[in-house]
Length: 312
Length: 312
Image (cartoon, rainbow over all chains, first blue to last red; front, side, top):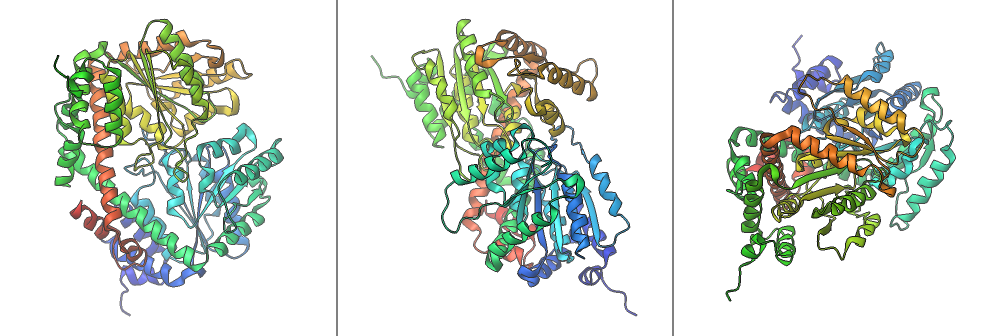
């Protein structure tokens, strides 16, 4: 018997090879490169029949984690294999990870059809890091039926989720005028599907009406996708089936061409993030009193930018 | 009589020279460079006695615009000259500017001690653009007593405000558990002063208590600044004096050294933003099918990043 290489084992779907590949990618090691290429090749070959990469976004307190948990249970009951990547890049000063309520996902621990990974890493830009994108690509390549990216909302990460996934699920609640806030903040525009979670609370009907009305306000024509609005009570597992159907309807709407374009956009987001991370690293190495000189008016900001790029 | 140069007129505080300088900076023209250096030199020379650069952040609907308006009225009543820069970088897909409610600020139109400018420009990174930072520097250099940067909240712009100003005012409301949300989202950590606006609504006392309690949870020692929490009803002009005093207390806490460090940090933020904007422009020029090749696993994302940087 010949020992298989890590890449060969990854290609056969060996879960330990996946775990090792993720560790390599998280560490930014070159050894991750052939694994990432293999993962992308595998994902591209499966085309539209491949992994559903779903981003879950929404304000803190909307119940994203509970909804993700309910999605896992529902998809498992249909025999689907599910991976969840939970990231918390939202706290730039503490670097903190408010992942406590994700512990509930541990109840799937003994189920080999469920893979859950938490990352507290934060991108150079305050949103998702390039490494997070790479872990996502590995999970997709490993052939899960669904890969769910869940972030602790607020900030750049909310916008990044849309760039990182095939489909974006926005979770709002009836409380606090979440729907209107989402509209005002431009977050609604990135949603492919909207869940009004905690729909057993007062005001759910009004929130649904407001969301539907707000959608009608935007520019649209016959080919415009209107994000379906679905009521859920994630804590009781209610409304999850229709939510899954809405995501699959968006996938059918995208078609093979649309999914191909989404994959290229995801790659673009990852490459750009890598570039920016490198430039920032260079800036830290170079800076000296560069910034103080700009602040005193002794040096143009543009000239300082030139100096950083020349060395990058 | 000799005609003065634009820079000379800017240095004398000519409002038309300021308007022209802002137009040049917004357009990214090289002619803005000497004016920016002059503005920074003037601001640095005034030191701690110089312009109070205040960023106002908070979720949509918290009343930031109304509070900014109330701040203008209060500061004018004290004889201060005030400039407001209102930016809306938060809607990445529409590029939209929800600046309607800022129209109220037009009532200061006839007052030469008030300067209001709106920018809808969005930075390459989804937050503030380098151009916005430069307009801010020009306003500071022009010698206003206060310069207020107000953004349509949500997203990267909220975090960027803290990097762009001397002091950050976080506006929350009693409704919707804003205070707790801010804490959970890590936004509270960037606040130097907190306004509980709409404090005539039910729940204001509870919100204040929660905010104070949340502050106690963070890491702190004897030198830690605890953001003062002030009740305001901006629509009625209530509570504005104590809010201004809280900002000035933070300024005294920072001292000359702290303000110097903040200015260097602001310059750093601007230079980094410039660098990233240039790299992104290069990426658009270069890309071709680069990203599709990454998506198909034919090319490493790292190799693609190398290719972009080599040409940047």
